[in-house]
Length: 162
Image (tube, rainbow, N blue to C red):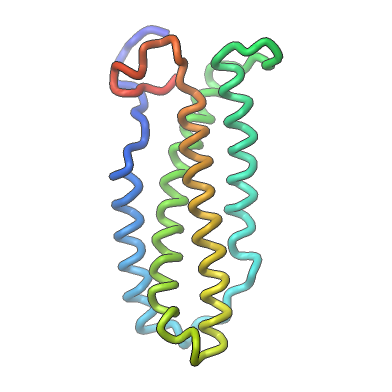
């Protein structure tokens, strides 16, 4: 692979912290005024994020094996690897935003958990959503980093992905 430009850079923690904080504050403020008019959250809310995280963990293992040319690895086209890297980067950002939303939800609900049954229920769902989003962030980062060729010297040149 030739070096024709800056390439896709590894996700930095600040790229994840900014949406997390902004969305957490926004959700908290919005829920301060409108929580009473919202329906109760269902326990299935975090399931899609958790399923995506599992799929990305599986994909990360396969991409890493292909990039490192492991003996039993099935070859993958470079464009597929690049798309996986982009998916991982996007998923880590989305997971960060959803984690911020869950934090905002929990910050709004935790003071009322002992007094209001709906708040206790929604706080449980918010906790599961926070957990699923953290797993999605981790899976996204692993998928993104799985596409980095260890022999390309990308570690020295800004951490460019495959």
